[in-house]
Length: 213
Ligand code: SAH
Image 1 (cartoon, protein in one colour):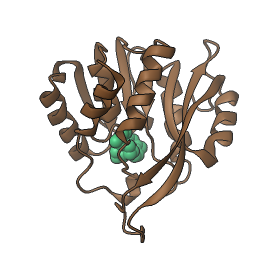
Image 2: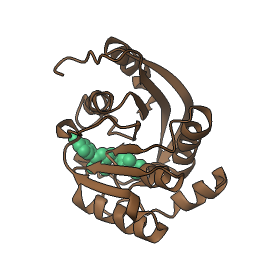
Image 3: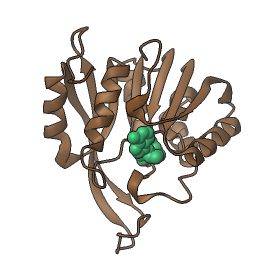
């Protein structure tokens, strides 16, 4: 599969029909999702993987993309059952449903019997619930050594520093300006632009130093 084909397929995975303000449900734009997945595959060879997690999976663009790229098993995790149902429907449509599991739970509570090869996540930016982005990173680095994560550009220095304190090295892979549709009641304009950065965080030692684990 070529990168452009991947982007085209991901664009057909529908966004959440009724996004909820408190969960910051924004769908990852297909060009950002495909570029992230491409770098994970070609540059770092983290994908395809035996066990890949998509945390805050929503309707599944990142996780289904990982499955399309040949990952053996992909677990989608989200608190929103409706979003996961849509993701599973898309997985069936794309013929990758045999590789996909969906777990409806809070990422902070997820426990797995083995470490994932990598985590992919477009977490809440922490605008509605402060610190949600950092909590996602903490969970991700607990569940896997390697994490691909999308953040507001203004948060990059802060999250990189926190990752470092937890024993993980962070690299900014690329930046983008994305246009978000007025999916939330507080959006007055038709669209607003947000600068985002895609990061790769990798634990350097075997030991995970985040407080609480
Ligand atoms: N990754 C998706 C959606 C990103 S929006 C996509 O690419 O389209 C962030 C997602 O995180 C939402 O679907 C929201 O329901 C989910 N979410 C927010 N807080 C969560 C939590 N504590 N545990 C699990 N999922 C959560």
